[in-house]
Length: 192
Image (tube, rainbow, N blue to C red; front, side, top):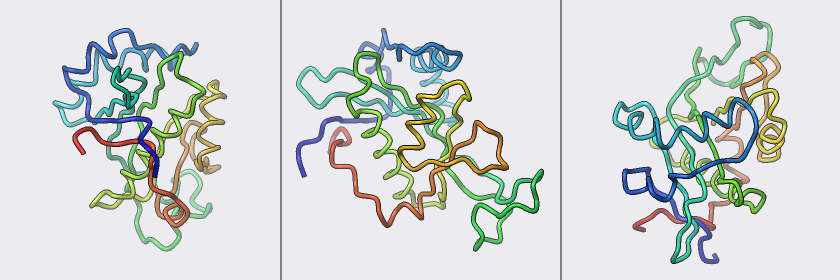
């Protein structure tokens, strides 16, 4: 295992300076929400127990803040109410709702995109979902229809969209992917 490229921890007041001018550089209605999350919502959401925001830094002495991810618990319908004839998401489960992790935001700072950092961040999130001590079958992310780049990114990393869910919903099957997944070796949690 080589040296970690990124380090991460939960966002705190101490991170505000490193992310003050954060911009994902994207055009679209989603980019404004991404750019505003850290300065306007992340700490309040954490205090209220609504989500946890992880911040990622380059693992160098300068340690530039390069991105973040906002995560929370959710559940998804095993059988979509509008398509009861469709196959359930988890055929072997007699559950109406299947536990999942919602990836609310995943953003990489402009200037650091295209270097594999988003993939490393996503690997950390996949490992976290797998290591949860509670049920978590899927990672779910909403991807705007117009955001072709994000749709391609998630599809490339094992996410899929069930036909009977609204087009925004993309799923990653934590259990089915666990057998082939390798632990992330390119990141470290601060303090470890």
